[in-house]
Image (cartoon, rainbow, N blue to C red):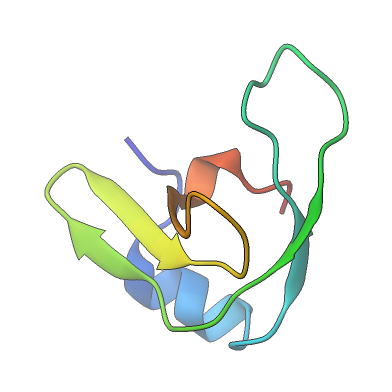
Length: 64
């Protein structure tokens, strides 16, 4: 479950904000990604579109 709701994430971070995408919390670092759209609540998860594959990710995988 996400720490933030989509509304909270969208208020805190504008579209185009840069993050580090961490596929695993156990591994440090990762590629720099930029959001392309506003976050959306999808069931128990909050997802956002980014500029690299896999394109739609859970916001918990972003180093916010």
